[in-house]
Image (cartoon, rainbow, N blue to C red; front, side, top):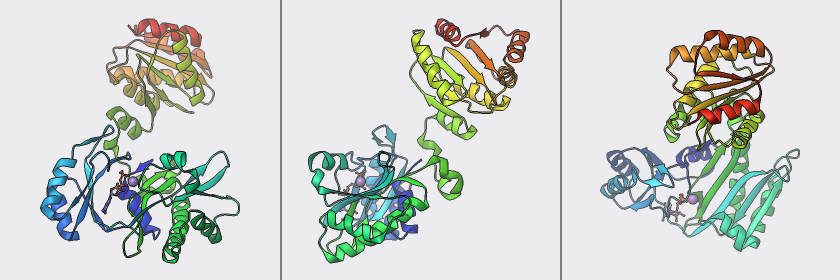
Length: 380
Ligand code: GDP
Ligand code: MN
């Protein structure tokens, strides 16, 4: 899960990383009030889950509360790389003498945590890595040894930061960033730019913070930061119901159980000459309610023309899935043909339930390929 800048900064603050004072605003009036409370020059920042806000015009300095309100008016509703701005972060403006870059993430190849630090911050890190790789200091942290403070020194010297006052502050920030990374079960913590003010104060001016979805159960406070408005409506509904849903581009809606089976179902649809409209992974288990929820989400997609259920039941029971399908048909009107292929536990019972129900939109097929061909034929 990606956090907004202001949420990442809240976590930074919690772990002792210096950030500027700020307030959230969703209207020009709130932006004016926030600027008044903060006092002096402020920066009005679009809160969207994408980078490059500065270049897109989503970040503006304001010398007065009225100017902050005007900028808010311009920035709210703006589309930045497909993300509509609904929230603003109004922050006390900083004077910038230098812009550095600091991040911590996983290096999956090395199976270690990786820090990166460069004095050439503010711009895309990919650009620095491509054009001036020698300017980018890297430091791997062994997961068994954990992070050692002396390693931060290697990183800071490696990046060529030679001002003792800056060294001291950045060493502390590196340690705290590691604490934040581990403490929040993060997958990426990026500060770009990490600034030095003319007075020599180092602080995080931006934050990019990604938390491992699989660890959110341990962090109720962070899980609560998820903004459902940032997702398309079907994805929102899927999340609320705890269903894994991915939107694609074609005509056949797909329900399977297990990521591997779903992936091969996508391939078989392609082999049969069709294109998947989306897919839901019912996962293990797959009780009737889960099936009903998934079917409702899949069929709400206006691109769907036919639906393919591909179930290979182990723990899942095909009769339970069949009940879910019939329950969904009772509850909601589904106009699209539903092709069902059952294999594994209680496959025969499941097929029988569907046949006995006598619903003409249900088509039972016995192999995955036949089912895919049928679903593609019916998607007209
Ligand atoms: P991004 O474009 O989405 O990465 O957003 P950032 O938060 O990194 O801001 C982009 C740029 O806006 C920074 O690199 C700064 O140059 C500028 N900026 C942001 N906040 C301030 C501020 O408080 N004072 C000044 N002078 N510039 C700022
Ligand atoms: Mn940035």
